[in-house]
Length: 290
Image 1 (cartoon, rainbow, N blue to C red):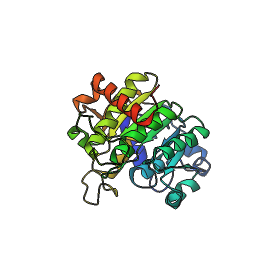
Image 2: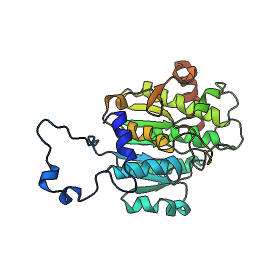
Image 3: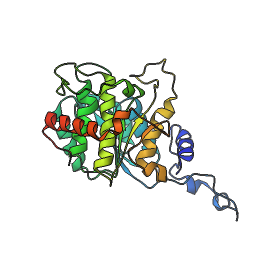
């Protein structure tokens, strides 16, 4: 399914499935048939995928899970603690599986990887979880995605949530506290690093489609009600990259904004900077990226 068809199909989901159960039975044979020479206007449904989404109790992660479930995919959601389970109950009732772990705690992040691996190999992982500020911004936004990437069984596709603010990030890794005990890095720094991680994985693992996505400034809890970007566009790109069979969705090393590929900060594709970042993250976690 190409980008335009994917976005159109997803936008028509509403509260129910794009292909509701029993729809074929409700149609007469005549209504189901397609006249010779006519084309079926309904976009082709992508093959069923299994997708793990971090930070899926609210916002873009929740909306992506909701959309992918409506398209018939298997979805594994993630909540920070058992107290947050009620937030994803509607998704669980629709067939999603749930995992639990606080990504600011690397022991819990390791256990989260174990939970995911016990469920079987994922087709795609969307690294959606993030925080805006505080001492844990580097841990949650950069270190945890790195650790999960290293520990979760290698999927076919990896998608990392970036931000336009990554262009303001610092390439100076000296003095960064990756433990979360001290506030040494900014949100912009963390997004530069996770965008670089996506590019480094694309280079290191040529058999995996690894991409970064800028969802835009959208009206979620993090973005606030005055955010000007389109909310639907805010989660469409990561869904498309996770499940679409469009050849453009099966590319790697990209930085995407609203289904369009853009150029990121120059450091993102700097191999030397990639290797410096990976080395710093390996030291911080004690876990190499194979």
